[in-house]
Image (cartoon, rainbow, N blue to C red; front, side, top):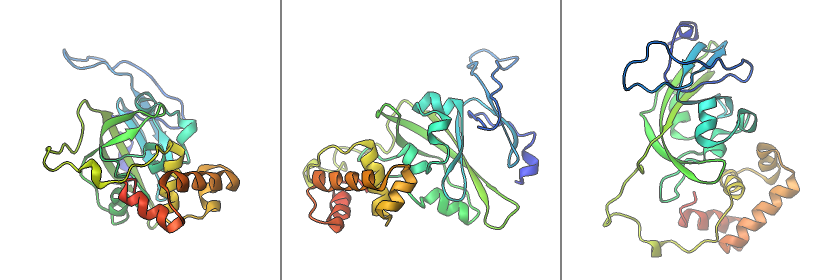
Length: 244
């Protein structure tokens, strides 16, 4: 599907363009039993015009968030100004109930998009601004650009009332198989995932818009909480604890 064909496309999922105002309205002629949701309108040179009512965010080839909808803000609490330009995996921090990350650098969604492929709908527990995990169902749409290897990935999501990846009691991981770990803050988890991906303190600082000194302090705090003796052990113990 080309960007030119999206001018008349309507997607039922929230959308917002930072460069364009939201046009909120009630859908006309709503039938019985159909929720009358507030709709946001995204207008962008890539997509044309998309009207939507569920959560939507768009990422570029580098996994940077370029659009964040008003519905996405309602569900997760982050404003567009807080997350635009940030890596999507550091905003959502989607994970399985066990804590194993689903959203990460070069995730399967992005890997598929680079090959021009889509990804089946999936469910994750996303971390809201208040630190509370929310189970969300996500669908993706990959749009190729005119330039070589350029693309955008639209993520449509909504909060669902059940936990994903349900496990039976006999297949659930046993608590004793993982060492106890002092609670890591949301920021420390972000630093940990960047660090485990091979980023230096300076690169972590740049990605999170913090100073290199602050990034170093976060790494030191993570090392202390994990009981790691060196940076290699930080990664190994994080993997054993299900944080990576």
